[in-house]
Image 1: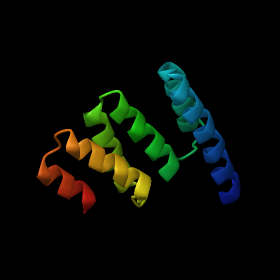
Image 2: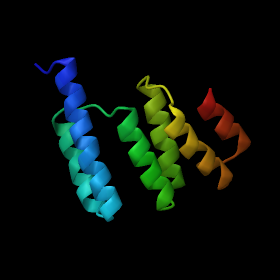
Image 3: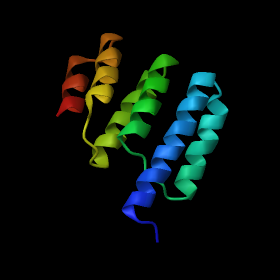
Length: 105
């Protein structure tokens, strides 16, 4: 059984790897890492979501980024300043005011 501390360390390690692949532009590797995380039951944390939302935003996948916001909220993770920054960036690109307000509540 994985302890909370071990789980945090594993998520941190995976986030570091994901972030490196994002910076390199190797999106297939990112997908592979995400599959491994799911297989090993390593839950996404705020940092994971921030990386993935930023990635989707940067490559123009605004709908996917919005879905990640929804998923993040459903898991009970609170929006931090980094996630809010990405949300505002997506809103500037044409998200409806109603949708923006829905994500903020």
